[in-house]
Image 1 (cartoon, rainbow over the protein chains, first blue to last red):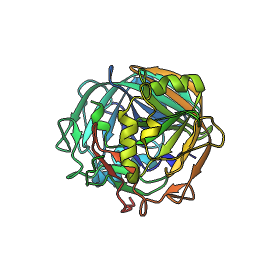
Image 2: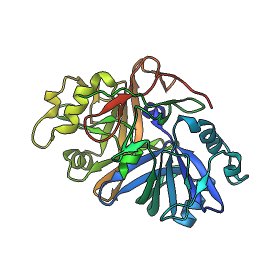
Image 3: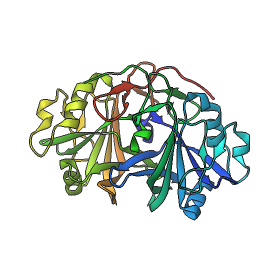
Image 4: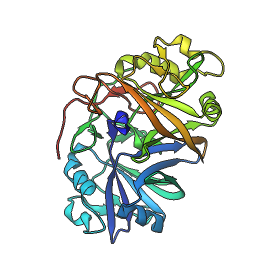
Length: 172
Length: 172
């Protein structure tokens, strides 16, 4: 019944190190607190990324636009335990400012997080991360997304179906 | 720095009872587990809804489309502690199937949840809910959203700025 929460934004979670990055696709990402600045991400217990974040205690939430769809799909359908999926992708990994996990140059923003809590939620681990730094490009102005000029990626439902955020603004 | 996770879908969280419903607007909603079916919602500790969910141990995640924008805005900007905001809204509250919190007839779906865990995350409480039932209309087919014909609401950033999910489908 989780399908009734969809469509959802899709992000890339980068774990590991600059030397050995491990990106995965995740729709299950959520803000959690203004002060301190916290966010959460639920990752399947059997995922390679889950073990990596448990070990390294940090991760990056990278924000893809529609242009990165092919890379997002590779990151979401390849197992990092079996192969180095960062090599199959066409993005550029760059060092982050405050965490060991790297950032992705082509993404609209990279949100750097240190793990402050891990909660077991059924078949997933919910990692609570404190946001320690962020890098971003022109897709954000004054901390707000520029939906008129950038296509923020949305996963419409499970499987290979994506779209992007509309670019009309409505006021209540 | 939470603004870099936006745009995000926006939902209505309904707490309380059919006799005394208390709806609020929430962007901070996330799927958590396939088995059992779990989702999470982060609610500010000072919110009236937070106390209500702690007391009643259940809630409904109602899925609004763009047509409900005015009601979504009322639910997000009125305090349920001071007035009965359900009376200011033009939606119809109906009994849910398996929880005390009511559903909203005009919403695309109503996801009924029983609280199975409460986690303190900074200035919010993160409620983990087990999905016990769902009602939905034509905006979903085979459990998947019909983005071609329905306008699923998106909060583009903080404040009164909304849009809806695009209706083109892209395949990787």
